[in-house]
Image (tube, rainbow, N blue to C red; front, side, top):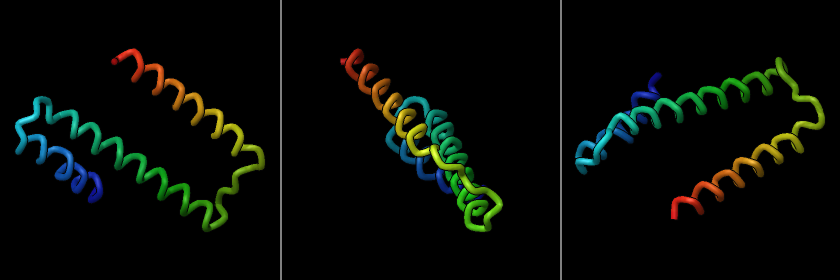
Length: 81
């Protein structure tokens, strides 16, 4: 929650100061970033305390997911130009 409030200040206040339309987008970005931070902290704690141990074979799955996301990003950025 503290991280979310800090990120809200980081993303929303500059958009208000610079008079950028839609400061609510900064609020959504801050909420998303704090959710990812929370998920990362939770998984790190579970792995460290040996509550969760990923099975072998997840690395190739994540590499395919990241490659697909990168491909989507390239297609979308190409269409925008």
